[in-house]
Length: 143
Ligand SMILES: [Zn+2]
Image: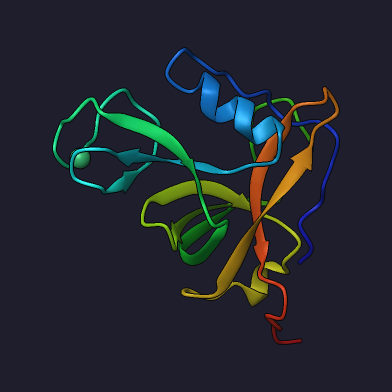
């Protein structure tokens, strides 16, 4: 089943902790938090490292490569938008962090745990850019 790319989607709320991350996304750059103390990378964006609690964290560019960890298909939604069905997924970035995102441009029946994904950027009707993941170039899915 193809996932529609319908026009009516919810808007994203940003806050002071995530504003710089979303600003980078508007420039089509996916960032992760990198800790200056322990070196580990993390998401979501927060003003400290969840591994060592250091506040010495900064945004650094991510590779944009990931593997699909798990997913669910949303077929109905009470929110007033018409983009169902859509795939909400947890992906493991090759940079380390696990990220909740949306999978697009992939038949739902072709999704497989561990499949290689690449970040892509969806331009919503309001001009806001949202990071999504698609099958990595060169990855073929059955049927
Ligand atoms: Zn740390």
